[in-house]
Length: 283
Image (cartoon, rainbow, N blue to C red):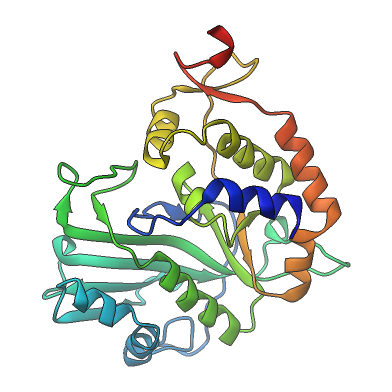
């Protein structure tokens, strides 16, 4: 266990599976190439295969146990650059949407490749990942987060297993997304690493300095421009960046390597964050 892994384990504690992860999104200038077989998600999965895969990992049973019967799986392939899977309950309307996943395959995006031992790695791109409980509006939700329309559903880690299996079947090296909000990066920090060490260090610095506050408060305070970095006059702004879940052994080794870990820890040491009106140095 590296010092960075131990640090994450200590501060993250037990996962909060009831937080919605709306906003785990891909933005950027990557080029995409999807599967060659028409009518199938990523060129591999028809609608029944998608439902079978989700069901085999327990998502259907979990949703039904939560009272969402008569599930409807919909695969939308109209945009081959942005293929979608939706799970509805009772009827396929936006107010009955439980899960939405938007995916793509990386074809030629050198700027998004991690070079390890002279080779590049290809990823399953997660454009968007949303899990929501349409029975729970924001007024009644316990944890309101930026980007939410409803409260969340506790199926995020199972969906990661689904996506990991898809990536492995496609012969890819990992998952890649751009967390639009701080809480998205937080929720997946056990499995994902920012490619750029400065961004990983920034994320860990926020985690270290604001660990006494609940994640929903931190994410809202960042969105409301109430978080500051020591020495900066302007509020801290969260910027999406490439975050990777490695599936290839060499890629995992890279993120655990002394070169990566030491660069991250050095970047974190350069950062110090505080909430507006809660600067401990002014007390």
